[in-house]
Image (cartoon, rainbow, N blue to C red; front, side):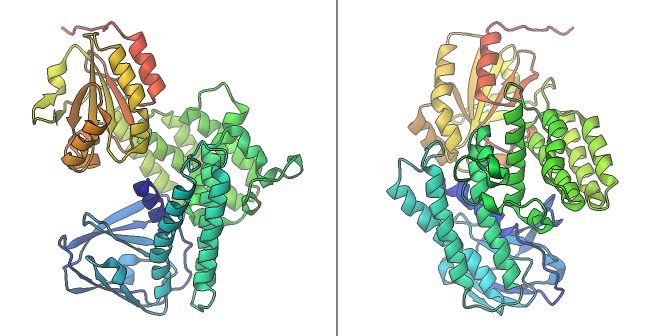
Length: 494
């Protein structure tokens, strides 16, 4: 859970609004007790968060370096140190004056930040610590209620959001910094929209009818904070969680009006644009939302390895090129779609599966080529993945059900960064099937790269002919496949 929230806190740092100032922006940084000597600099390359770039920055321990405006550009950035206990610095676009930072990675809480706008960086650090504190306080007090399926979860979430908003206001109430008003406004929006996103994303489709935007149709009090929903302010698009909320809202609207339809990415594309036309009346926000919506579908299709109607997506991109508000982003959409098509040419259902070489607890090596003429059913997991762990009882039941079927081979593949974590997880969860490890490169291991694994849990099926039958499937699809393919249908090639 800690890793989950830390990930989203990083996204908070990247979703502030752009500054219109062009003054000197330099970060002078001195880092001590740092063994790696390199840190990762992540930035968005467009105001709409459509794309990002990653640079490796040399940071010798004990030496001073400068990150200037040429490197930081006019972009939100995070600098992520690669020690085991990772430490992250967030640089807002609103910083346009020199800042000096002195950091001892063995004592990160003693960090010294100097400069007129240093409070922007200090806020990101302090609000992260405060967020952990109130989360664990609430988790301890309401341990049985801090679950997404709890009827009281939203009330607790509202209390947490209120505390975080109060922390923000108190933090800057006595300050008078350049760009402070815009910085605080965007921080408030981030906190509000992460609240709304979590509600809409986890609730049933009917939930959206309780949002304040439905006005007089509500028979009871609207969902807290939904009075802030705005479809006409283009600045909001620079907030990651505003975009996530709108995407989740559109999906739930489609699911509400099509309850018996399987929602594919093609279906989302065709039905999402009319919903955008309904709510985003202004031409500028309409075009921008369609751009972000289209890019998000492409991104999700890439993560889930789901095939799409490429021509239909190309046609939508061509439409966006005609708008003065979205034409500048068409090249990004084209590139992201091209990347997806390239992946499909290598890794897709029906394609021949890449051979792999994975080790078990004793160091024995297993390869796909040695498992020919069998259907290989794979669960990709990690010890830190809560959804993976929650599905283990179903996995064990499925493997137990078919344990005498010689046509099936059940594999669990861990992508933990440390073998010890994998082995501890095996001992704790007692998984059925062959227990294998992808190696310490985790998501960058050959296995994860060759099968385009970027999120877990991930279920894969390779049929007896060595072709991918399921890729990034859900567990229901896995069960149905096993039920329908208990006898292998081998195709012997001449």
